[in-house]
Image (cartoon, rainbow, N blue to C red; front, side, top):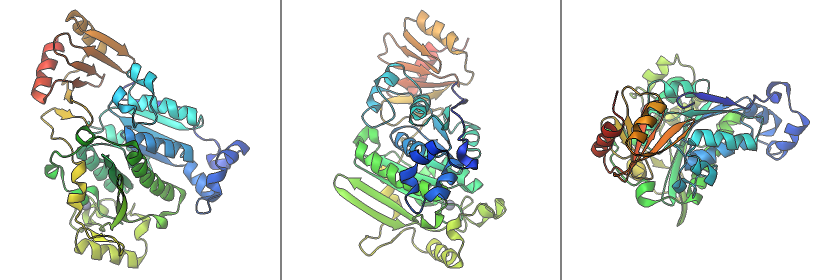
Length: 411
Ligand SMILES: [Zn+2]
């Protein structure tokens, strides 16, 4: 159900004991790749990852992780499948859109068809709500960023750096995107890379500049490759760069990531002391690498990593991926004219259903949500059991709150 975990599938029994003939055949081409081999494959079976956001990037990341044999995958998303998603969100189809399935639920169903031995969990909730991220990320070996706004990303970064878990950051808009593996103890955190929430002003999103599916796949591939290196045990092979890529026109460049910022509460010495010195990324095991990271932390935020690259500052590079501004209790989602409103005392969905039908709304209900077409507003309400309401077509947060007060009165 929404807000909770839905556990399906079963844990890979061969994860500890070894490989069955079927599993050996299934993963033969990946094991033949020398850096992974059988040892790396067994490590992948034992791994657990959180995919935060199951939109375009999240769908691609989920496929890569499931097909590679990652044993346990948690998929967290607050949204449901719509027709405008089908152009680039590769796990979903028309039937998912017709049924208004939550993206996390629809994704888990598809992944079960890819690998019936996969343990996959759907979390239908907002990762910024209290306790949701902590529960979803518990026990994960790494977190893959499939989100579309800085508020969630910064929370992911804070959690990851507090727990010594790598965050594979990624973002796409238009035909280009970027990706960076942020590893506690080895690199800076996301706050040090892009600045805090107060510095994130409204910018280009898929709502304003669109999004091409090949750009999504390219960025997801950059993230997924680092995930395979980390999970299979080839951690020293991971890149320590912010990669920016475009498919139209074609370009790919890397900028060296700064090391931990000494004074940062998340990635600096204070944060590491809080973790008791444990969980530091294995990238920084050698003394020379630590010295290199320290030099970078003292130097400019970003520097060119190859002779062909142009030195660039981090902030302008990220300008295309800044979130919409949020109003009190509300947030505008990427990709459409939608405001999210939080109900302070949510009622059972059937209570709202009766109210909305009495008000003349056409109501559709599935096990995860309720959707109502408002008769004279030209707007639509989508209500989740955790008290979240997506108001579509309302225009602005004030109008969305007015619509909620009119149609979802607290009885
Ligand atoms: Zn930091």
